Length: 356
Picture 1 (cartoon, rainbow, N blue to C red):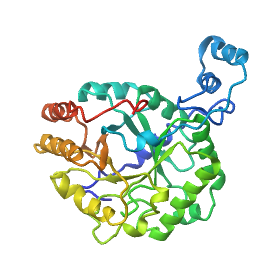
Picture 2: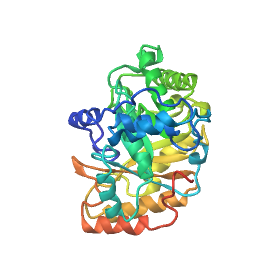
Picture 3: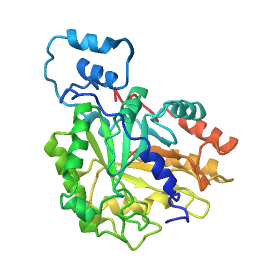
Picture 4: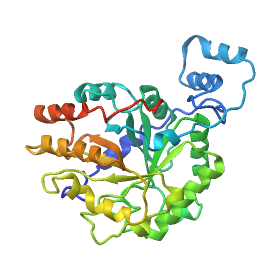
């Protein structure tokens, strides 16, 4: 478990809380392919009925509707390299509820347009959370964590029934989602990391999961390959973990500003990005970051924003706004909150994900 600077430790209780956000499943099958809107009329009606919409109005509308034309799956390509930066966040209780998102937006001075949440292996695709995020105006971003199966087992097809069910749910919902499978695989703190799995097992599992989704026609996924910054694990090279450009859309680097570690964007992320650029030109997303509470935090926040803006190949960042072992929240102190607001005002950050 890395405690020096690169990432916050994760409590088992937090993982249990994630698992407690198991999705409300769709009632009946949603239309298998809809257009660039999230739902067809009947797909939205069926989802609303699953959520308990009053008066049966959705049912009446669906029953009286004429047969619908088949339309294309959601096209995620405009979201892959937008002109402006993603303004992302991971929050306790979000997107199960939008209240934490509204609170964060008030503190930051800008609404997030990417929301990360965590899904344990074996959980259903958390449709309600994905819809909440998208309806709020944010791209849902799932960190899919294979705690219950080894990478070797996943790569060998032991959980194909589960993966297919997950992929079908993504396809049926037909809205975009970013998925990071087995993140921070180059560290030893997770059971899919260096102490329990080889790079070859990781690559085989990643490709297998991706191929099952492709076989099911679940093309609404932005695939995010997410190593930890290499600083705490300099002897672990990233190239052996790379599945190939055909299997990855974004490189989602995970790295935190902490009092005992690097204090500049280049020092924190540069060595990792340099390694990655030796084998791919895929764009970067700072997939998890924050700054530890302290005198340095306002400077860290400014450094993060300016570092992302300075690089055209960095799509944005996701702020880990939790008080866990350290206070990573932007509101850990008034100076930090002001610094975040000041930086978030930059027009280069934030855009309408539904009209990128």
